[in-house]
Every structure is written in C-alpha cells, then in structure tokens.
Length: 504
Image (cartoon, rainbow, N blue to C red; front, side, top):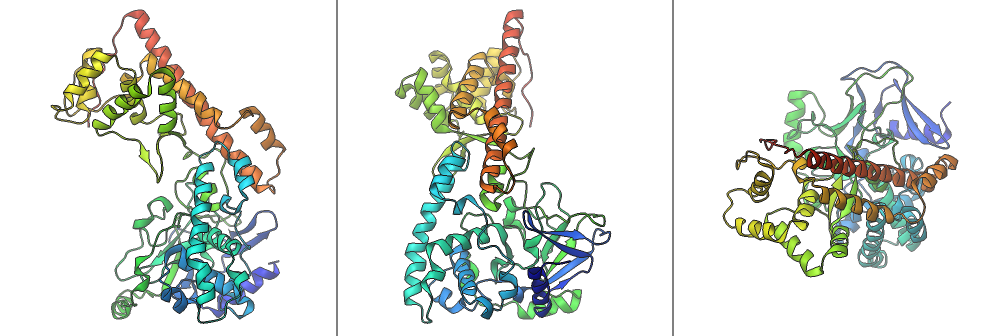
C-alpha cells in the first residue's frame, strides 16, 4: 500500500496533468527513500510518463518570477530563490503536493558541518572542493539573497530564506534538477527525479519534445551541454536565456501539427527491457564516487569510473625533496614548453589515475623530464624550437635511447617512459598521496565500513569514497612496481624494448 505522502503526490500529479503509466509503482522505504518499480514487463520504446513543462518548478513558473528577474538572478541562484519561495508558501504553493515529497535537504557534503567535512573527507578528492563550495555559496547568499529578502516588493519571511535554507535548496537542486529547454532553463521536474541512479544501467530516458531538437541523445550528466534533460551538477551554471521572452509558440504549434507530439510536454521513454517487479533506473552519467557523493550524496561499490587525482603541487613536493626549487621550476617550465599540461580545475592542476591504477601520460612525461640528465635535458631544450610536432621532442630522445623507429606521426608510448627512476618516483608519489588520508590504514577503513550501518549515510559514503580511492592507489603502486621490474629485467638481459612508437 502506498504511503500517505505518495498518495498525495499521485493526486497532485493528476491535478497538474502529469500522466504516469499504471505499469509504474512507487515504493517508499524509510531507510532508502523512494524508488520506482515495474508492475509488468516494460519494453524498449514504451512511453511511461508525460510531464507538462508547466508542472515543473522553474524560475519562469514560480510565483517569485518577477522578483527573481527584477533582481537579475538566474541559474542556481534564481532557482534556489524560486524553490525557497514556494516552500515558504507551504500548502498555498501550487507545488505543495510535490514539495511534501522532498526531504528538507539532500545529504550532500555541501550541507555537512565543516567539522564533518574535515573529519570524514580528509584526503579525498572532495575535501578541498567542498570547503571551497561552502565559502562561495555563502558569499552568493550574502551578496544576492540576503539583500533581496529585505528589498522585495512582497513581504518575505527571512527565516525561509536563511543561509541554512539556501544551502538546503542548493542540495536539492544539485541532486534533482534537470535541464528542460532554452526558455525554462533548468528546474525541478516532478516524477522524473524519483528514479534512482545505477551506473551503466539506464532503463528510462527523459526527453523534451521540441521543434528544434531531437530526443535520441543519451542522458549524460558529464556531457549535459548536448542533452535536453541531462542532470545538472552542483557547479553553478548561469542560464543566460532566462531574460528572453518565450518566442517558440508558432513554431511549436507547427511542429505539433506535423508530428503529433506536444512540445510543452516532457516524456519518459524506456530504452531497454525491464522485468515485472524490477526497479527502473535512470543513470546520471559515467561518474566516479567522488562526483556521485558531491552531486547526489551517495557512492557505489566497485565503481569503474573512480579516479584519484595527484596534484601538481604534490609532484613538486616530491621533486623538491630530491632537487632544488630552482631545478624543479626549470624542468616544469620545459615540460610546459612542449605544450603539455595536466587537467586544470579552478585553482589547481592535477593528474588523473584511472580506476585500474594507470596514470596519465602527462604525469609520466613530467617525471621523465624531471629525471633527465642535464646534457639530455639541454638537448631537449634546444630541439623544442625546431621540432615539427609537440611530442617529437620527447619522442626523438626516446627513439635514440631505445634504438627504435620514430616519425613525427608517432605517439609517445607510456612503456618507454617507465624507466626505473620514473617508477620509483611513482611509488614515492603514491606514498605522498596516501599520507593525505591520515594515520589510519586502509584496513582500518575497511573494518570501519563493515561495522557501519547504511543509515549512517555520511560515515558510510565517506568511507566508501576513501576506500575506493585508496584501492586505486594500491593498483597505482602495482603499476609502478611492474614497470620497475620490467625495466630491471631488460637491463639485466641487456635487451632493448625495440618497440615502434604507436601510430595515430
């Protein structure tokens, strides 16, 4: 039997013209929340729901639209005000039947206390990012929302727009909002946000029928710019279209008459078979556990998209333990002159280690340059000005060293960069990165996870993240050790790799 809040939500959906197939059933579990299951076999191509865009909570549909647009707010800021405003109306809000289904906030690290962030996320990919997020979002609230509360034409209750309520709204938007169309931007899409995520297991696809867009694209939260209804990440994306008037009415009418589709309707379409009784999953994209916890508040076991980052700062820390700061800066400059760099976020440069423990080529190249003899390094420095191809500088040195064929169309092979010294450097970097997690060993983390209950969500998912990252570092060490052993074997037998460099 459906819970009271689900029955209220079903009545609200019906009043808003949301069409939900009788083949879908909602399950309400106190521990795990709401899930969607199939009451009968579902088949690829089945349209299981239609949601009017007017039923979605966006800046354009909110009763606070005029106030928001007059203040020049859009994106996450604007939608946060819209959500807080509608929640402040309680039963008087047109979305009351939907909002009563939502938790006060999602259990994202964004709403954890600073003490919890420091104790639970220390060493992980999220620790620094969450602290920066909290600082920036507080500044957003102070500069944009706090003044709005006291200058708005209608009377607003300050407690409904407090910094706590703002962070709560941001957590709901980060984990539940979808991009709808150019006019509405992104917003809260009732029913669509009830489907749980499973990596690589998309059962149902969300689409916006539009005269200017086809809906065959896959939903992928990492490549949302190309998808009409991709999940929005917790990073702020400003919606510059919010100030525009809705100008598509004629074209949409024409489109509807030709195709029979309603351009004002969102559809949920099955993309593969689901058996009766099974849960129906959405997928939020190919995301590792750090991204899942950051954006949605959960992790997955054995996630194939997990990564660990090694900051350039840590590489320089290792370098300065062996060489002078001047030496390290010079070698780093040489590396950059070959037009190589690591991945870059807002305030840092880093190198990714994949879930199988393999580092990026850029990291290996930097370590290789750091460890080059001075005369070889000088030769590389001179060759930069005359090389026809970026990788040719390193490639020609490798070709000369290993007696292999080289051409400017070749790619650098990672195997050739894995000298014994580079492998020792990788092991040292693994130790430095591991030290970020503190004094507790990975075995202690595993034991703590085994004792932990899933209801302790913060502890459980932070431990899952720590363990998944540290497992990657173990594989990273194995990768480096295997490379060193291979090099030792070759040196002992006096053999050359004699491998042709990879072709494009």
